[in-house]
Length: 616
Image (spheres, one colour):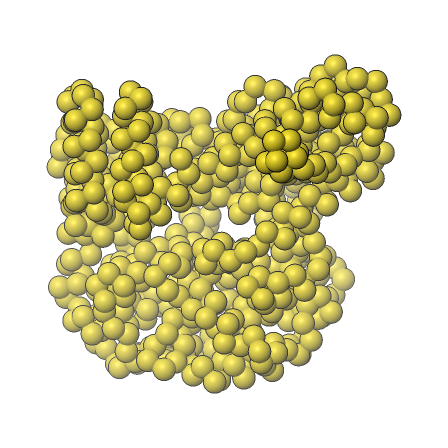
């Protein structure tokens, strides 16, 4: 069962979750039943209550395991793991949150946190001398979502613009010391919930977790490749802009005719890639993509202007550290930058932090009384292309058009290199069921017929997001199996053979092609998982390159040339997909590393990490 479906049932239709687990237990599949219980999200409270998030439902489901004769030892082991992870969050709350809460009055806590946040981020941004500092800065910003949701929506604390005492800011700064620890706890929760991991614990004293699941390794390979690609594009566009002496104008003409800043140009490039189109008039929630880009660009510009002013940082109030404007003033800024009036309310709502937001990258506006606040050092650091996509996904907006444009990109790639490729659609009217069958792309190489299902999904960068991606891959595999079985029936196969004017193919291969960088963990019979970089690179004969720097000289060293030499052919293509040479290169950059933290008890986590180099 898919994670999001199970979470929905747990929250809104618990009887359906109960029924699913009961059916699995009746078929003696207790391991899958336990996995469903983990994925439902009811076992752990991340707010540190020390109890399951939905204690009543959890106990009801645990009783089901007992009634269906699951061994008590298995039930106890699972229940102990739930208690241990809940205890970690409770201990974190006790050591890292409650002492701060006790020293800051409720009415000043959120204000103190926002002032401390900007103060800390400014310090980090002036000292970006190492990759470690960059990671601390990014982790701090990513932790803002959890901390603000805890303070504003769980504790229901107010935000006000009154002055505070400096000692309140100093106390609030301790949130950042514990941000990395909280990310470790979330990593423990996510890997335990969705993957096979090893937990050992001396309850209340020591806790250790070993992350050794192949899918967890694949997540890190996929994430690393995405970051390589992202950094390569940023570097390339920046160098091009410098070389071409690119001009950016803050005038009321939207992209792509005019770019407000270099960041808006780079963000547009990412959107071109995310959505496989250079048409920025495509709409999300009835707002064109170029409007989202410009809105984030306006925030960036306003924050740059604010940071360039000499603020009195000895005044402990929000307006000295953060950019605060009324709604009407933000609207005026957006209008002056070319955003039509009919989009203003919806775009402000899109940019405003709420209890579903991930962090202040995606939703930089915080509502304070009748105004909107931006933490300026965050405002100048937003990847607006990615934030647009992630925010849209979080809000469950329809972005299905990105799948259609991605399909066209793949089909045109094949046709451009002389490989005939077509989309198949058919309605089967037998038994009056009118079942629809659709294959995104089919093509023939030599004597092999390829069925390709093409998917464009958000890039997963956390273990939870990767688990959701696995759900989608499994669903797509069953979908492609159904489609290929239908089209390889005798009558339908003859139609394909006639369409392509070939003799009957001897081999059938299924390919799931996505925009998510291949991590290499999936292993389906006669179905291969690949990504657009691998697929397009093979057919365009463009191997990956290692970027070598020597003084002022930059050289590119092609890799895996044996898969790209000679004419395109079925044997070479299949070997390329099955060998996954690029995944193997990335795998050499993955290590295991032990991290230790202490939150009143020792926590050790043995997980994957990767080294940063550039392969493009």
